[in-house]
Image 1 (cartoon, helix red, strand yellow):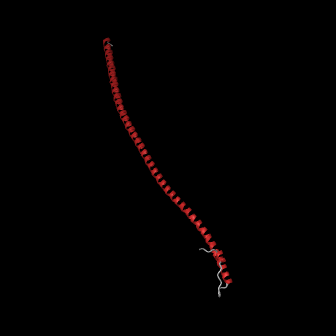
Image 2 (cartoon, one colour):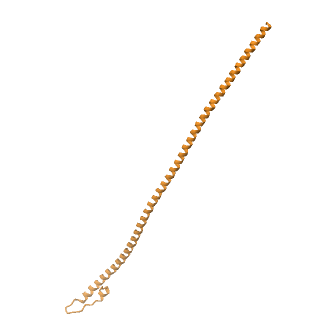
Image 3 (tube, rainbow, N blue to C red):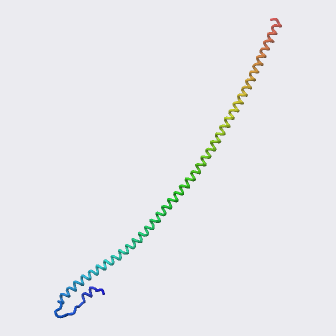
Length: 170
């Protein structure tokens, strides 16, 4: 059974012969009651503080748990974002490689086409040069033959002139 300061103050001891001095007992009980009351108030204050601290610890524990879950979620999200970014980068690299390969193939096809066109143009130039040379040779032969005819005509005219001079006796 718990005693209260009031119980201590109201407690009365039975008297006996040769007993204790009642005033001294009363004074001691009064001091004891005051100390007991102070201790009880202090205990109540400490108990209230303990309850507040326990409540605070529970709140902090819940906050810590929430923060740990949030941290785990953030780490998971970060890893997922990193994986997604890596996959996107791989896809973009693949697309860039395909596009570069297509451009390279198109460039090779264009270079081959240009080389073929150059070869064809060289062949045409060779044929045109040969045709031009043949035409020039043909014209040169024609000029030579015309020159020979003119020369023959001149020779013939000279002969005729000379023959005509000889006949007239000049």
